[in-house]
Length: 175
Image (cartoon, rainbow, N blue to C red; front, top):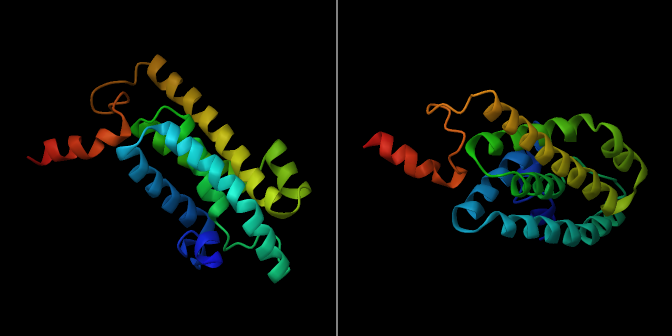
């Protein structure tokens, strides 16, 4: 059960880019949540996942002796959920939040890198990704605002459409 949880249903066992695969799986799960529940639910879920994961990661690290094993992607899931829940969920912001999260999680600039290097155990594993999610949401909101201000809100981009309405839009196009 521990491995199932930490690898987010084994997506962290991907031989290539397990963090990116875990982030995408987390984004897909977030989409399913947002189809039926408000963004606040996803926000609270990310906080709960953060808190619950710290102890599980601590136990795993005690058992294996490895810190922040690449197969652990529950931190990416919590971070991307935080980013997606904090940005106003539109198609563009959903995409931007995931991309900014991955960039920040990979490059680990500033405080994100300091937490990654300086904080040990489950708190360190989870902390840098939660910070990356927070800053990804801010960057997504700023980028979105700049796109709208620049007049790129024409119908074919449809920046105002909430992400959960995309299936209805696609169904309308296919009819």
